[in-house]
Amino acid sequence: MTAQNTPKHIAIIMDGNGRWAKQHKVPRIEGHHRGAEAVKRTIKVAQENGVKNLTLFAFSVENWNRPKLEVSALMNLLERFLSEQMPELIKRKIRLRVIGRYRELPERIQALLHEAEETTQDYDEFTLGLALNYGSRTEVVDAVKAVAQAANAGLVDLNKIDYNSFRQYLYTRDMPDPDLVIRTSGECRLSNFLLLQSAYAEIYLSKVLWPDFDEAEFKAAIAEYSSRERRYGKTTEQIKA
Image (tube, rainbow, N blue to C red; front, side, top):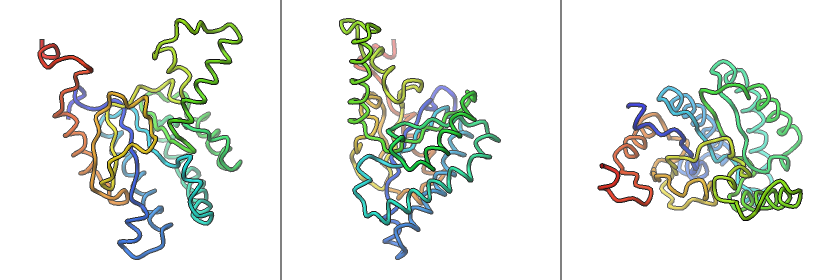
């Protein structure tokens, strides 16, 4: 794998924890625990294979509609994951970036996220994005509100707004748009994830359930990405000229 055909930014919709648990006849939370192990594997593999940015869809704005016991268990799992991974982030110089309305998460989670972002903010070799309480539509609403406030304060000329200036108000303002979006478990939808940012991303649909996602499947996704021609509206002849 060369730097030329390695995606700079991979975003993953981690799907299938519940179905994995059902297949293995264990409680759903065990599926989420196994999913957390897959997260650790994937971060390591991404960093080792030259990916500079990895964003994981960890908890959506719609996930609050799940049973209260499951949501509570997910928050506890997130707290444990953050506490355990902090030394690893520092050791491997991983910058953590949280995208989403994470101020609506439990205060203990907010404190851990804030600490992790502050501690790792100067690392510039690898960025891990965690999408928490995230939805692309709410992101756009928040961005539009921020633009309106800036315009009212005389800081922005609305007649000069284009996508490049608008994206500075998105949660991902300091991250490149994803080159590759991976969705596990065989489902074929983006589920309100990075819809604007993924406008020209390649999409890889993996049939593997997230807890079983491993290095081989990660590399299969990158190999598929490398075989595609990214034209951005141009013709094949223009690209090859």
